[in-house]
Image (cartoon, rainbow, N blue to C red; front, top):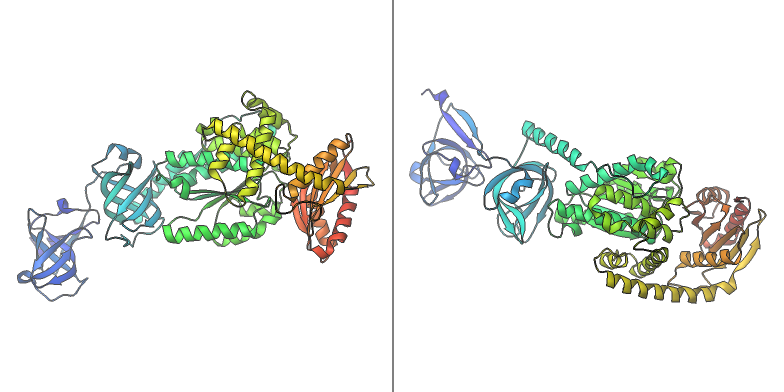
Length: 612
């Protein structure tokens, strides 16, 4: 054999002892020294000993040398001999292991397999490093161990495409691969795997084409955008991307968010994540205001960045429901854009066109000729069914609860009530909505995941649900009546030029503070009583605080977001902001300009059209 015909082999990262042949020559790397010779690595998993009698030159650690395998001993030790060759050909050796889809691992327990996929998470524990790998069929955790608490395969990074070889084991009744080797794929190999995964994910993420729960022309026109959001959420689940759902902290927002929560959590469990993956890959958080405040994005960023650093998680997909459509959300979107956080919005507040550039998708009835009567709870439930149709039995009553809780007058409210009337009467739905509002007040910024499930009767414990709702409704009504007995004597009436009746109540000095009901709900309860006391008359109620006003209207066709924008321009130094629905909303201002702002606001209300 001529020298240029000499073959020298380079072992691939996934090769093991079975791939090493006696008398063959390999590329090796000096690992260390002992009195009797030096240790040489053939790859990260395999090493042998060159006895000092078989060393040809002096070396230092990490030198690349050529070695011949003299003998493989029965105990697995490899005897090597250094060789010096000037001209040779190098041939790569890859382990002849069949790559299997992650979905097939359930049938491979106890066997060594190879999988190829994308690194979705890298979590360092006090023991092994846990790599979460996704392929075209599912998600799998891979445990790699160097020594306790030490990062294995530090060259492997988030979003890398890798090949993993290891034994399929069961830990805590869950599948796990004990890695023998993890190799980063590059070039054509990486491209092939990437294309395969992307094609499969696109197909898997596509929602089923199922009908709506009720007949609704508005929601039919929203169907393409609803399916788009469902596909984005499904893909996030399949790629182990954390999901944060932010919602307004009232019955409508809670119903919308919980419907999506049930769909996502079930899908996470079905797709093969950890037993607690639905807790660290999904978070539901209430927003006090009906928009995404700076405080909200700050909290979400803080948690997400910490999880990204500590647990190797991706940055999250944020789903906003019953908020997210208005200019008030824009400052938070701008902050989030610095970190490339994606957003989707499910809302029924009057939208501002300026915010769509920050969103991947935006479902809002105003986009297709509807209005706020199609509530976020209705929209969220229909999207949840597209995300995971299997959760429908748990959530089909939530649109009815949301509709009565948000006082919808759209025809869809009656249709959703009729859908569940055999189990939930309208009064029961109202009680559930009130119980949600009451409990969320005491929960503050907490999601109350399990308590809310009991209130909504989706925890599988109907007796507990009935008892809990009854107690919460009793407590809420007692506090509402106490608040109304304090407020109603202080209501100040005014007649407006358009024939509407205006009522003012100062909720700062004539209502109990820091308790239920809060100022917004207090104003709503006052408004309900005034509407009953003035049948057939257009009524506007303004609950006034030191630096805010809450508006409720019946038959006076205001446009609160438009009025807020106009007042902001017309009253310099007023510090005016706010918004909401067209006839239900709030306005903020600086306390020193309260009287000026209120009079200007009342003048605009007096100029609004009255519904005949």
